[in-house]
Image 1 (tube, rainbow, N blue to C red):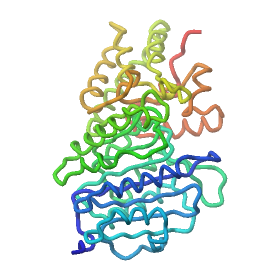
Image 2: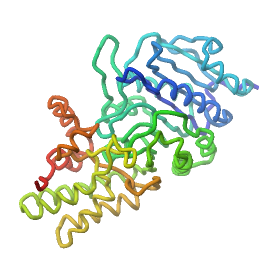
Image 3: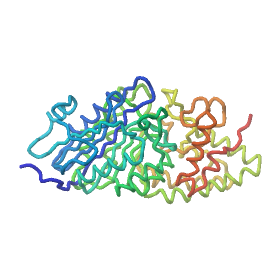
Image 4: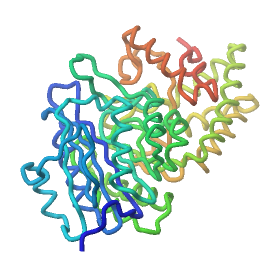
Amino acid sequence: MTTPANTKKPWAVLAYTIAEDTATASPLDTSARGELKAICDAADFRHVSVAAQVDFKRRRGVYRSAITALDPAERGFKDIDPAQHELWQKILSGVDEANTAVRLQRDASDLNAADADVLETFLRFGQTECPADRYVVSFFGHAAGPLGVFSDRAPGEAAHDTLRLPGLVNAFRGSRSRAAVVVFRDCFMNCLEAVHQLRGSTDYLVATQALAPAVGTWPWESFMASLTPDASPYEAGLGLAKALAVHLDDVEHRSGFDAVPYSLIDTSAAEEMATRLAALTEALEAARQDPARARACARALEAARVGSPESATVPGDPALLDVPTMCAKLAGLKGDPVAAAAVALGRVVGAKLVRWHHSQTRHHQGTSLFYKPVRADDLRRSYLQAEDVTVANDDAAHYRALALSKATGWHRIALNPLPVED
């Protein structure tokens, strides 16, 4: 018997994949196709629905799909025959047609997937077509952590846009969506800036502090096994994170990196984290007034920079501090007020915010925080800190507008680092 239209299920996966790239050749198209098929192959459609939107680089237009029982098409996207589409022919071969319905739609216009309105429309589509008790939202594309996610451009425009973190949250709010878990297959998205910005949009994040491999498919069969009808958001998020860890422990899945660290982040601890970070910010600002204290704090902060995009051994970005490492280094300044503030922040991050962390090496310890590079070599190697003054100033303005900056004042430290010794 066919499932009635819009039957509410325990879980739905909303997958938003952006294969657009500024590079001439990109592996994202191939990976995006494989990822979509893996999601659909793995889903048990008796209690999980799937909605997906894919913006390919090498195929004009945007494809949107859902596997469940569906209502009529929405204006703008036109129904097309899945049997006439190579990828969806493969997907349909694994679908139990007696219990599911399939719709594939295409918008021939080349939408800007880095636009908050485009994402909001997809989230609304996913909720309407795949009503569920709890949602997993999966993002796949390029990202710059604190500076935003995705890379795409409006039709007729040459310059690529980035969806800044406030815009990402606006898409959730505008669609009235709240996720149980947001999974980022996007670089650098495990950072305090994203955690605090998304605190009202999701219960948990699964994200990396470093580079996320763009090739191959993720272990969606193991992921879907975590989405049991009675699973809580925490249980589902932990299951997703642990399955991903097993997958990434296989060197063949890491794109040549020695480590791809991933964490399960509990956004309910974001407010307490912000309170502790605000206290640390004030302590570091006070330390500026004493040259000896400022130098000691600067050394501790510099020691928490982890990795480089150019490094296979320690992938990361020198514009990011590993927060547990930062707290430990500052805590070593015995007798300085900075030490007590760092200990308090470290306790919240380690015990409440980072609920689970896994890496193949010990360089990354759980979550990151932006701190502008000051050394020439770090500036050169950073993907996140632009060398172009105009771009850097624009990024700084966006950083000051983040919820974390407004709540903690951390931008005063992040954009004006303590001076290092020559």
